[in-house]
Figure 1 (cartoon, helix red, strand yellow):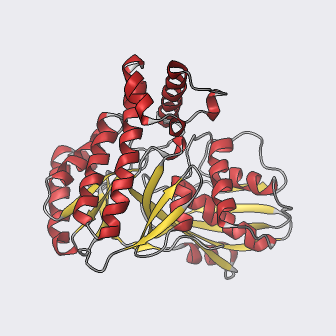
Figure 2: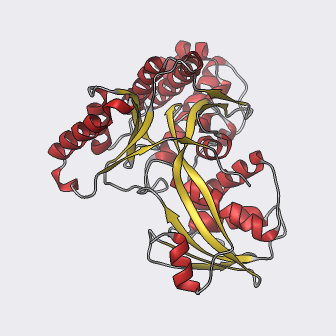
Figure 3: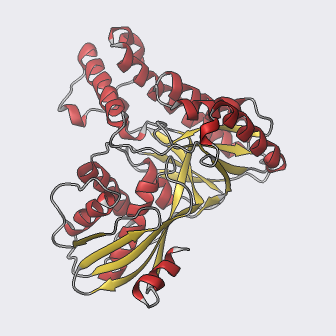
Length: 390
């Protein structure tokens, strides 16, 4: 059953609209946006759909095909504290919209995700899809960059996840058959088309079968370790520094890092090594894509994955295993685990002519290592897609 069918069954009428936001993948540029780095990414042709109709009394009533509990609140009376359930992302989104616009109309909605949860930024996608619907019923219009900032703020301020702008930017700015190349410091971006001479490619998604939550993970700790490294490097080098939350590695030249890195605690040094390395990989990756060299772009994506394991020190045993299988599988240009890497999925850019063999090999070797995840592991083919439009 999809969200439209469930809406009809629940409310005995047709929804007035269906809002959609795509998921995203980031082959190079992981774990850098919160430090104002550069990223590359795609929106994909799978995502979050919400079938909805307006409620003139201002009540928001939502159910999800993925979760049992129905959620309800008023647009002008969102609980002050998060409720620790799936709807917190949408409560946070309501608060961010209400802080900027006169919300009066609520909505009834049914939410559907087209892939398993974990690693593709379903949290940002559900926020953006919901914001799109709530804006339509309230007659609100704003620019893409405002949508990105409000969606990010919903996660930062209400849910408590210290994410950057990578997820939201990919899900808004992306266009089909283009690579998004974004600088999160000033939000400048380029949409680089696939070169006519580029080899054919598809995006494969391998779900570990293990779900995860960012807020309860070590994600926020990694962000603080980056800030700590930047703060210390500024102090060692005599640079000016202000408040800790406003400190980013982007403000520290790489030469300063190399000069003082041995003074940093190992964890801080490793996080910074990943950040500076990833910054360099993103710039090289954008150039490789511009030239149509998907082999080089894929190699850099594999390198990004290795750095996330060794220097960023994330990646569950399940995701590390999928990554290792991908690195020695014919027909895979490159890939890495997707998202925070504590559970979730891996993504890969693959040659379509190798698709069947790739799927067999990854599944066979993965389930040989984790037989208890048979029936939970899954794999999918996706393609690049346009980002959301308000």
